[in-house]
Image 1 (cartoon, rainbow, N blue to C red):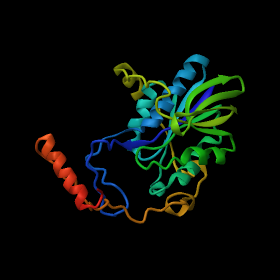
Image 2 (image 1 turned 90 degrees about the vertical axis):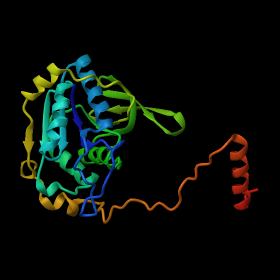
Image 3 (image 1 turned 90 degrees about the horizontal axis):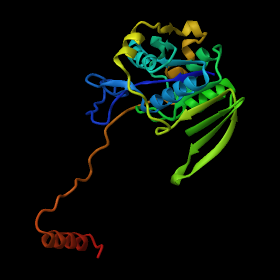
Image 4 (image 1 turned 60 degrees about the vertical axis):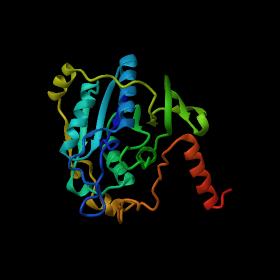
Length: 262
């Protein structure tokens, strides 16, 4: 079972103070800590578990600068056999569709039974790359996958729906699946695993190596272009009411009356 996992090198923003860069279209990266995209982490773990049960290989692939090598090293340390990074200055400002085209050009000539992507990326949240890549590869796909059962030439998946519901589908292989968090428990990366990963090769590809022109990537090859990023203005502020329960209740009643709500 040969599996390709598309991963992304993203900033951890949960507790970071984000600042807009001078160009007004991107976020300032100085001071941010980068790691494997959370959804991709679960996708990688699922791929490694399948490889451990059924045999085969796992290849981690990403699009980005040399800084993304740290993400690929973690993938190798967690059980990936091979890693590929596609890089070129012309790739900058590519949207999800352009990234899907880049990944397609690199993956189309590789052997695979399943392609995994995360359900979304933590930095932009587009959720475009997986479905777009499946269309370009001309393979069936399923999104928001929470459970996988492989049965010969097909795979049965449970998809997460709204309201706590799940949908069960049977998809023929080869196929692409976008993985939701919670499908497994990503493993701890050992020191020995990290040391071994540092000795493994990361294959570097440029646009010319995957037969893509610069007009097909970046802003010129994208469907979505960022015109301006800005922080939403603060229009109202919360008022903290202090005092005893009786005093706070009286103040709330006065506010409601003043607003004409009671």
